[in-house]
Image 1 (cartoon, helix red, strand yellow):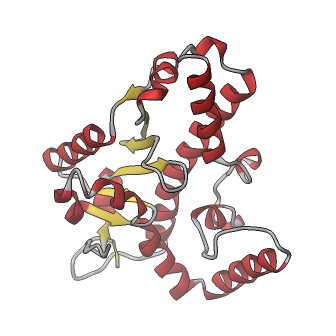
Image 2 (cartoon, rainbow, N blue to C red):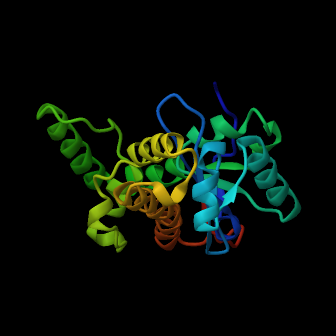
Length: 234
C-alpha cells in the first residue's frame, strides 16, 4: 500500500507530537503499543489474551481499533502529529482510522535524509557493518535502523547493552503461550517469562524515546530558516 504523508515536520510539531511504536509477531496485528506524549510514556496491550498482564502492571488494554480512534481524536483535538519510525505503524492505523494519514510523520525518512546528506561517511560505515554481518551468515535487517543511529557515540544516547540483541517478538510469544496454558492466571507465569515481558516494555520505551532523541539531534544541527523563523526537517 502506498501512503501519502507529509514529508516535513517543524520543531514545534516534533515537540508536541504523539510518538508511537508497536510490537507484534510476524504477520500479525500489533500486540502492544507504546506512546510518549509530553515526555510521558504509556503502555497499551492490544490483545485480549494479555488482559491479566495489563491488570497486573496497571497498563491500558484496548483493541487496535479503539486505540487508533483514541490516538486520532487526541491528534485532532490537541493539534498534534503522530510520529513513528517508518510507515509500518501507519499500515496498522490506516484501516480503522484513515483520517490519520495526513497527521502521520515518518521519522525514518526525516532523520536518515539528514544523515545521507550530512553524515555520508557514517551511513557508509553502518552499511559496511550490515554487509559484514550478512556475509558472516548472521541475520539482520538490510537497512540502517534506529538502534544503529542511537549507538553512535556522537549522538549521546545511552542505549542499554542488555537490549541490543533482545527479541520483543519472542517475549510476546512466550507470554501469550503461558497465559493460554495457565488459563489467564498471571501469578502462575514463569518468572523468566515475566522478566522478558518487562524487558519488552523497556525495549519499546527506548524505541519511542530514541526517536525523540534522534529528531532533536537533527534539529540541533539545523539552523532556523531565516525566511520562516523556525526549524523544519524536510
